[in-house]
Length: 173
Image (cartoon, rainbow, N blue to C red; front, top):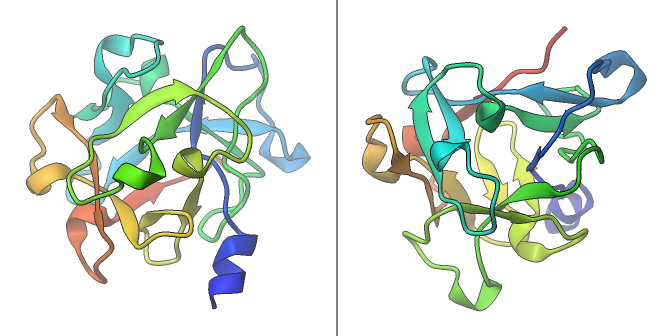
């Protein structure tokens, strides 16, 4: 099972500039919202739409802004495909959990310039709807289940059925 999880690890990232045309059939990156299952009118984004290392990742009313568009390579969800950047623009920012030595319940999420294969930027989209930090037992978590705008997301020990950790990631058809 562990080898299977390692084999499907990938990065969830945000690209500074997305291509004008995104075609899932061709395997090109497609921009999609990431929504908590507790309220799909909310979306994962980053505070103020500020593209900078360390900008916190939060929950906010879905508004179709660029800061709420996460790019997925392949377009076949559920199940995992590569969730990665579009390689356009000057920088690409990834969902980042910080240094592996500091992983713990409550570590707040941020964006950081993407680096290929970086552990803290590598995530698995699980069939359960959880988004798990690869090679760990930590999942992307809606802090305290609080749907208030600007609630900063965190990692927390993955727990089956924990609705704070279940996300809707839909690719366009």
